[in-house]
Length: 306
Image 1 (cartoon, one colour):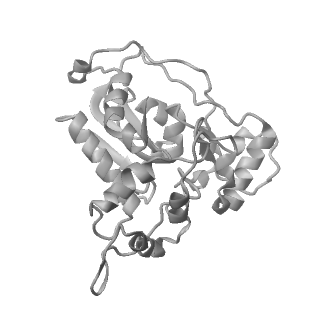
Image 2: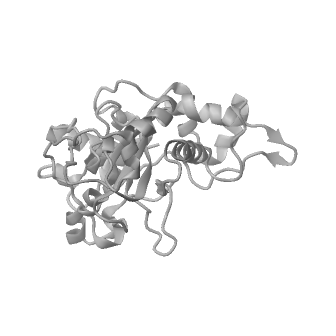
Image 3: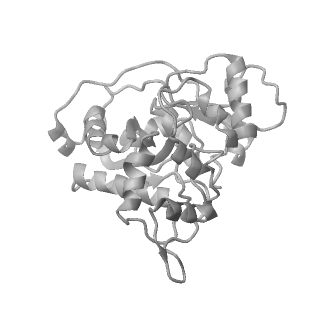
């Protein structure tokens, strides 16, 4: 399993800083021309449109944010080292990603080395989109599985980024009034307003040196699990029974993972190369498989799903 996006790394008073309760709905600023990418200020919608043109047909979503929105809810050790008005985008994968991006990626023989095939596909897709949509722009990309070498803390908190960008609501213990768990920690989970739990948070893109103006206002993620009872059910299903997929259906989703995708993520990481070989997407070479078993899987119980 990958790292926990666990606020348990911090003292209770520090975790309180992280809790997100700014639910005031606000909108984006006025639309600017695409040529504004060369200007110090740039419109959120322009970046989203350019990214969407590259990745939406492959099963990905992009949601822009200011770095300040992210840093404002986190303690210093987890903040991003950029100006508060720096433009960033959080990228999610939807249920379509597996068939529209991952399997074609495998079919073309693009998967190489020992790292996780899904991670390789996501990285290839995002790097291609950046080079095509933002040539000459310096874009720092952090992936959900990456850790800082010195501290071994995650490069970014995926669920926090999705929440402050308005992409998916991050439900935590603090969102349950008088919760029944006492001192037993329950990790939080993001729920997408359209896909429920059938999605994953993949990356944070930071457009270094590009700042957005004060006219750009934050929007809240839709609170699609409003009742106390449903929130208790969600957190218990996620923490205690995440393998049975039930927490993902806490709201009726517009789309779920395909059976083949569920089979893949239900398979232990060490067995996935054999499954890909069985499907015909990975050739078995003499002396062993073309791909070594990944060290960690793409089904994530305590971060941004799988």
